[in-house]
Amino acid sequence: MPSVTTTASSTHCSKRPPADPLSAERLDAHGRRDFLRGLLLVWTASAVVGAPVPARAQSAHNASVTQMRLERSDDGIYLNANVDFQLPTLIQEVLDKGIAIHFVAEAEVFRERWYWTDRRVAHATRQLRVAFQPLTRRWRVNVVPTNGSTGLGVQLNQNFDTLDDALESVKRIGRLRLGDVGDIAEDTTHLVVFRFRLDTSQLPRPFQIGVVGLADWDISVERSARLAMEKSP
Image 1 (cartoon, rainbow, N blue to C red):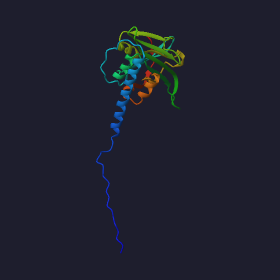
Image 2 (cartoon, rainbow, N blue to C red; image 1 turned 30 degrees about the vertical axis):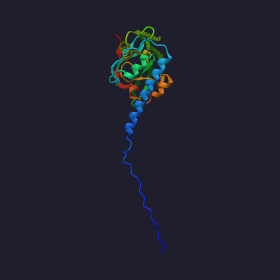
Image 3 (cartoon, one colour; image 1 turned 135 degrees about the horizontal axis):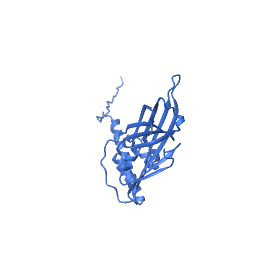
Image 4 (cartoon, helix red, strand yellow; image 1 turned 90 degrees about the vertical axis):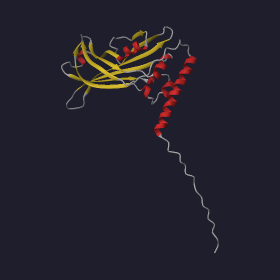
């Protein structure tokens, strides 16, 4: 009977634990933050800017709407709203290098219909641009009218000594014009939907790529409420 030769073999079993997807995600977020800070260094080296503004402490930046009021005046219907939020350190660093950031405030008014979905009767949007002016070492806020008016009829430019003062003006959304007096009935309550967000699409293109998915840049809030029309003082 012919002999049969057998060969025993074994495969080394790795004891390395499986990769943690959450750890990988955190590393990816840190990498993109480092990428953004690297872009800031390049941006600073290629642009003439003033001396750096002192750093500010980082704090929570969850946004909230603290007040909404629907007003009727002789020349139209307006919404007043107050927003509260804090800027993370990374966004402050971007501002300190002379790169502007943009916010968008948007409001919709709906008329209730028992036989169908509510009908939108008014819509308005306002863009707010915040930028540091190196030559004057002051902060500028531009209120830009879109699909209508800022409520003042013209683009509004304001200058402030500090970033905190500039942000306070951004947080107060005053006289956002929704329409003419006859556009919205005043003898009933109205569903008002208000949204406020940081618009990263207005950043320079390299920064738009770097901020995707970073919580530091997620400043947004939406609030809905049924409001009665108030007479403007």
